[in-house]
Length: 635
Ligand code: 7RM
Image (cartoon, rainbow, N blue to C red; front, top):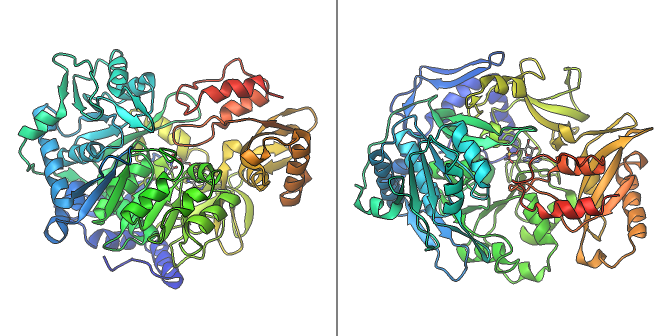
């Protein structure tokens, strides 16, 4: 693992240049480094963004679990692969070595086979963040079954939709889950979903909360007794480089979620490479990503990327607020976490709380801090940098998507100087382009572009399950011969990128394009503001005007609202200009969020536009109750 382990800025630029000038040679060198191949590739890359069709490492054969598990057994068998930290701090954590992981994955793979699952079958995994989740993912990959993990916070109808779309033969779930002080009846949700799914003939049930659940005769089986009797060795299926590894659903702007299809070799090579460089993982480090494996961040940076590097990856079952707001920091102290990867929404929530929750704990093990999921506002960046990183752990603001499979734009810690709110530079092999609305590529320093990628990278999704046409229309039709990300971005004078938010969040006010993120940044600078969301609403003169939803901190709650409105607009005027002033400011106790922590601006936009007849599907929201409050108090 010595090649392409980037340690300095100059080295980054050299490697980057090589990756652009000779992309195939570059990726072949990365793929040649330390992976186990059954057979090497005949051709590194073939691509056509018209069709679109992309193939990496064609002709190669491998199994990703041999790279994530078997490869480490000789040298690192007794090293911890997974540390499991349960929801309740009073319950003991669990340490799973590579050797133990191997036995558990192999036994699970044998159970899948005995249940009739074969290569190419789809298996839906609907589990909480317990070791069985990572193990079942790997067991599917072991036998070539395509896993489709559905986040275990989704409703039964959302689950049914996903099971049916990819015709999953099996569902793996648990009797229930813990979430803070609550328990959730997961098996009940599965039962309800399966009333609508005729494709699913078997359900495996892991025991987690020991609840008394209904087992359907002939369909449902307890997992543990099957595992207890299964052999602990299972030959890994030989997979072609482009065989599908998994499907993961991501919500589109309308209707049916998109089942993004990721394939085997390119995904493995890219997630392993980016994990190594972005987190600068060293041999005895403990790495913790707080995402759920139900999201792409968990697939790539809890399971596959870390394990492909022989790392120790921590899985946390709980929430940041239970039993109190110190839980994250307690876990970091307890397991001496070295790399910590979380989302801006979590940072903002914790920054609202008393600093005592942080200062009680020893965070000196930390070396690298990560952020992912949405633009990180300046205030949150500084809070994270000052209080968690103590100004000595670089923050990697990593931009990427479910569709990209791996991190695309990010600082490399200790090499790339960071800049608050900037994801900074493209990783090697990634060729971004900023485009204007007319399809022209913008060069150099730009304040307003649409982010595209103009050359394939190994971990890009290859299609949408069952709907290649939608894949083409969504990603390859807006700009000729380019992958369109749906995000807006700017580029500063040294080439750093800042993601300004979804382009659908761009609001044109009196002919000026305004990204919501920088305005929200400015609003959040106000000392009484905890969080904000800006949307546009129709305006006779300006075309659109701005509507701000603002959550106040405790310290702001008693204050005069009209005064606060003036002060907030004063800050916006200072940061962006009077053009970005908010016409309306509504104070609220919550903002509607998706389960992965993204603000659902679609709903806020409708309320601001007084168009609440059809708010669309709010069932997948984290906090649907706040929608009522916002509607009641709308201005
Ligand atoms: C990894 C993930 C993708 C969308 C993406 C962006 C936004 C993600 C950042 C970010 C600004 C970041 N996959 N996004 N990371 N925006 N800075 N560092 O989140 O498919 O769930 O979402 O998330 O809009 O297009 S995702």
